[in-house]
Image (tube, rainbow over all chains, first blue to last red; front, side):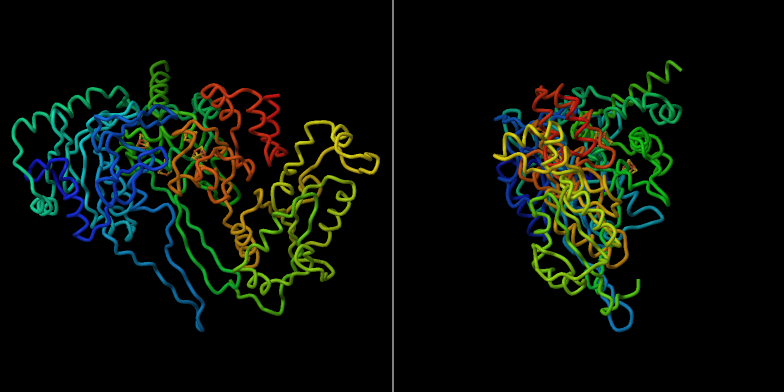
Length: 373
Length: 262
Ligand code: SF4
Ligand code: SF4
Ligand code: SF4
Ligand code: SF4
């Protein structure tokens, strides 16, 4: 999947179902944004009615609310509590099971050949997928399950028509415009009409587009799309300071870590909603007879004390040490490990922290401390 | 791991102190697995299930209930003496249970109100967890305990491995299950960030905040959570106090936090 590969067209919003049908007819399991339990989450989409038409979200630190907005399109919301990682790197996954046989034991590994298609993928989320690719399939260790699922995954991206108050993708070079890593990119246009501008980003995307009944995209369509994206970008107030990787490393012993500790619940929410956090733990189980064993992998977090358990105890006991691990890994050490920041600026950790601890505010505080020292 | 020999079945005893029997019932509730359990251990003492009693010592003792009478104070010492491994099960045994609410008041006042003949009541001034009296090898939290955690604990013990019973937050259960946070999305008070996982994500997945049945998690920061409820959700002091005075009110962390809001 590369940059825009040339194909461009207009799909009227009332034909959006045809896109969903084409994806299904190619054997994909289609997942996209849908309304469940007071939030817009990612789940299976059967038809266009499953999309959250006319619903928008309001987000601030520790706070998420949906609103009905008759003028809101299918994709007027921004990122919610789920991220795509739960489909490629599941929260609970059986790695293998073993059964005793006459001589030793036999091992079974689960097979899953489902092809996944994601619709409504934002620019920051594509960036996050690319970061997890680096972790799971481009390093010395490769996770075959992730690699295969990801390779066959169809990405239908969406350019954000608005940003939440918690978004800061623009200062992480991660959005709001979708520039690469997609098969199709949609821009929802609603100035006196309801259409989608579709751009293709891969041969797969080209082939899909050919299956749809569309009309030619005109200059005015591009102008409207560009203006909308520019307005989205201009509305983003929150930012991450660009010198934060070095700043944090210079202040590893500052007393401000204790101030954060007094607020932080070490509940792990921030890491589990983060689309780039990749840590897991492995649990072995046996049945009562001892004849059958299983190995499972679960999402883990550096906020859990067991995470840093080494012989004799956990090395990160204090809340300060655990918050420092999280923010320095995301913003500093990720660069050394993977050549980019570990943060896309999606804002999920800010919204979904039960006590509203804000990664950009903490970063700004350390920059202030740095200036004073 | 060597396979266990059928000839040396470990002896299991189940003891009851001050409690409602709900946790013992979790063992009987393991319907599908119950026969395998009965096959893997010798159930030597379990009055809830059978009147037959085999004399100690016992390899594994499961203890339900808190210590709230002078008789129980003595009996728990005997149980400890006869048990190689002593595992406490449930909120009563691990934190004093709902009856620990009386620890916040003078117990004689309750006795006078409740009983026609208070002179027959012989009770301690406080109800306490078993670990206040004897050393405990493992504490299984919950009101009631989760039967899958109980099976996992027995499995691990019989197969000589570490049980997979985490001490992290209920929030981890929410996020793994994909449950939308009721606190962030609806402003409902939820104890999940300071409560140990293990119930199977019951309340948040049913659109309610966590009530804390599994007691405090590792390193619970109750002050920060309570401050958020009072500052951001304008929760009155009285409600805050009650929030931390549920089934695990007797745990150190929740007792102290509730006392901050007296
Ligand atoms: S920063 Fe917030 S979400 Fe993260 S562990 Fe602390 S309290 Fe939980
Ligand atoms: S650190 Fe926070 S803002 Fe950055 S990618 Fe993770 S969840 Fe999003
Ligand atoms: S921040 Fe913590 S949970 Fe996230 S990837 Fe780093 S160590 Fe893992
Ligand atoms: S609903 Fe409660 S337990 Fe679940 S994530 Fe939110 S605060 Fe944590």
